[in-house]
Every structure is written in structure tokens, then in C-alpha cells.
Length: 132
Image: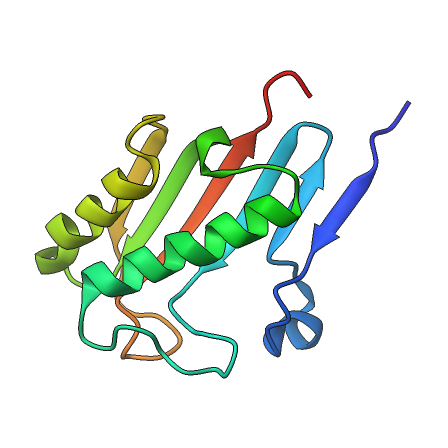
């Protein structure tokens, strides 16, 4: 028996153009796509502030998880792509505030850039809904 696939959209203009979903749930597993600090009006939140960007990203991820029937409490893995190592402490603090209580497996790597040079971090998460 195959489990139902549920695609979650955030309404971002690029989702139908590029062909991706903000999140995908199959059974008890939820995967959230790389998420940046871009709001519903395509404006960057927290420009120049890595902590504010990361906080906003976790807020967006939390909304996607909720749509999928999960929460930040269900996160088992995070991947953080940062543009400057100087921001690692600020982004790490936002990570701790969002998911530090569940202590997911985590990766943080420096990359050469994101789709907009004003973006300082992109985060993706995997979640598992226990008992589901």
C-alpha cells in the first residue's frame, strides 16, 4: 500500500515556474524545501541582519510544517546554507531558539551565494511525526 503524497505550497511565485513545493509530506515524513527570508510580497525580511533573516525563515518553515500537520517539535534534521562564516553565531542562535529543544541533526555550510545577494541564509528541514 502506497502512502498519500501531499504537496504544500507557500504561494511563492517561483513554485509553479520552477516546479517545486515548499514542503512535501508522505506518511509521517515531511521535507521542507530550502527557505529564505522573502515575504509574501517578495520583499526581503531582515536585510543585512542574519539573525532576523534566520528567525523569519524558521517562522516560514513553521507555517509550512503546520500545513503538513507537523511542527518545529517534529524536526529531525536541519541544513543551513550561509553566505558568510561571520554570521554563523547569529544563525546558530536563531536555530537554537527555533529547534534547540529537540536538538535535530544539523548541518551548516558556507556557500558562495544565494539567488539574491541580500539573502544571507537558506534553511531546509526534515521532520518526522512520531506516532503518525
